[in-house]
Image (cartoon, rainbow, N blue to C red; front, side, top):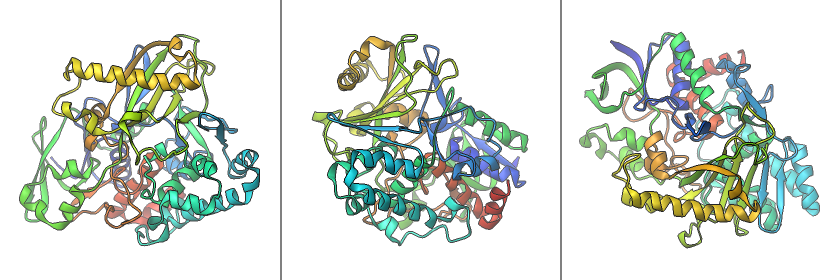
Length: 495
């Protein structure tokens, strides 16, 4: 059977593209190498508790806000189980000597931080104004007509850290405003302003947790694709592209032979995608540039199942830093590890008072696990298990500083490393957010949806912006190559 479009990877970007194009009448097939769909939005169960692989909370879902409009178009509003996070402080940015809160709502955000930094209200107002200006610059954030690809501008050329220090004079306040930069693995002097602005501004709009896990997104979106006549094949790994001239004609797979299509969309990392192309075609400058791009750092996570009715549910995220510098990803010292973490209690329908599951996340370099890179899940050996145990104990020691007796609340715990993330999500070296955007050379790290192969396209977190809102916007950009952008914007606005 020949499809109109084959989509490789059932992560959020792949599922959203499948939804858009199947709605538009395209005969779509999504293939996924793993048994479970969802990529970074898949979930897993341990000791009766559901944990998220990547998506722990999302943004801008109050009625009329940006993600709300997109989700309404996708038919998700009213179907997702959501819990709005604490309006007075959905993020807690914590150091050894003090704790600060991010409130929901731009005026409330300013008021809350101005209480801790009373002489800096005007600077906080300037900070929010700039974030709003950046967001309104991007037409797909405001769902307005405009040119979506504008990389040669101050928002891409200015670093997030440079911008913050230019408008905020107090060093501690600078670090507080950048305190949630684990959301994008921010690197000081490198991560562009537009990434910080789009993410922070959207979360200040409103912040939400998905009750009982992010798998509900996967189930709703995959069901919609099938209802629109699309096909989804799991346990089906893509291995090689076949060409006629410059165009791909078939995709070789492990379980369904050669799959034929007019066009192909890859939700995989570009490097993983290019592995399926013959070496001779990859000699061109375009391929070599993308193959050598820097990726964001990976993560180490402890998944805690607490004793029943033991640890209070926290309707906020707790970011901790052991030093006054929150830009840890770019200044990683293995001897001082871990220098930071974020602790999140998962929203569960069983209880709003006590935590059913807890995730503790910190940075980890791929080099720390590279010696086991040729192994598979469950087959890495006892030395790997001992490595994970030692790392977990170190991280728990740091958690105990702010949560004395935390270990006493633990029933069981599990861990994941960059290798775990690599194997379950297909992300190169377990990178948390894919390709690292660089304000010092913004054009160098740009990967557009349309590739140099006429009928191959990209989608997902490596293309524009990561996170649920960023990938949603990127999926629209990718599908606009088929339908036209103005057409899709009109449909989303009228949904």
